[in-house]
Image (cartoon, rainbow, N blue to C red; front, side, top):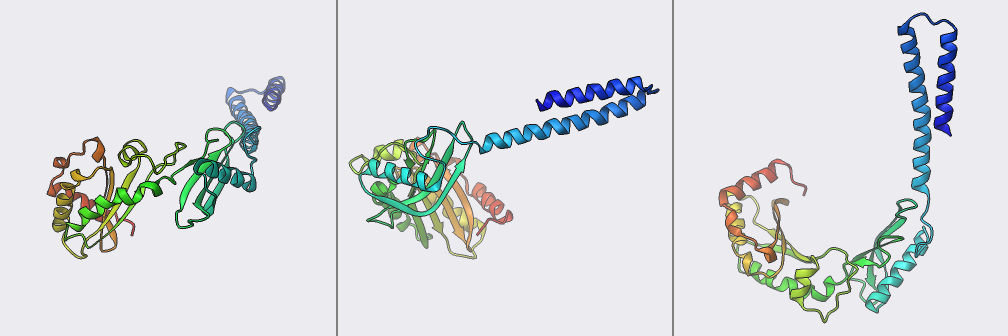
Length: 271
């Protein structure tokens, strides 16, 4: 309706100008350009208002309502049904509405009521993720998954400290403690995140040598690895190692690693 109104007003104004005897093509062009711009701004404003209204509209018929209380209750119910234990919200939570077609999505950190230290992330939506997606299964496998990585670090005297954790993407699949570790690591997308700590104030050639040696030792591991290294409280290396898919350490040289470290340092890597 707004488009038709704007175009009709433009046409009537053009007719009146012609009847009034506008004498030059230049005047007519300038006038028409101005009117066209006015019409486009009018129509554009209407379109933007329509888009805003559409974005704010809510999905109808979802498994929970577009409010925190309803979304929270639904997600916690899904987690209890999935794992057979009671969960509570343990940290961050966010509810975002994506309009009448995709609906609202709710994300939060959860933990079992009886094990509040086991914090996981979980997400549900009114449309795509009606079955909760979460990463709680890491607690079934973390101890066994990180043990070989910790052992490897212990054989390297240049590693003065390390931080190790098992990570995985949220999934609707139910993993249990009875599942095999090998199957979990190969099918779930899980990986071990390893942050190595080196002695501070050494030259980049030395750090490159450390990394070269470590990279040539990871083939004994049976998990994918996100490898990071720190010295002087900054990251000097960050790389994903697809060990389960045939990672090849021979593609690295000490010189390449030295250059990579220098690039990290030149970019002012966040502390």
